[in-house]
Image (tube, rainbow, N blue to C red; front, side, top):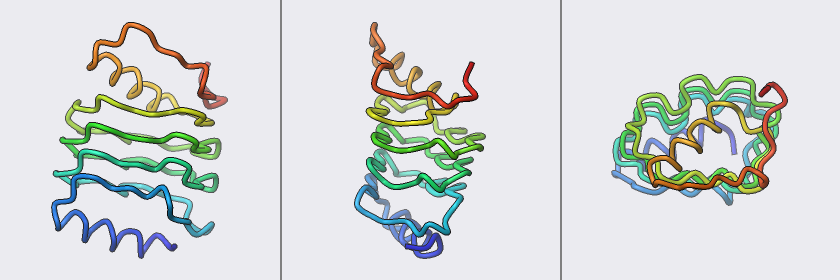
Length: 141
């Protein structure tokens, strides 16, 4: 689906006060290269599932969850983030409630996403982190 249709769908969900969004079963058009601000300013949003979504052509995920103060759970498992070059403020002003970030078998995990993964673990008082199931972005040194 094209980005314009996705935006209309998410706007309708936001207007309805939706708490959970599952996009794991959709096919994005290969022409879509930006998910900038996709879920931004959805005040009721608590859970997002993007598992297995083909976003290998996405380069921009900046401001994706900007201002989502009730976001608690994020499933990014199985994603290929290798081409993502911009995650600036991806979780900006998201309220610090995120307690679960699933990165199982995710490739190209950026520093901002890794930071949110670690912060979620802190919020739930985890004492061990297993990073063996993810591949970090090549620019993380």
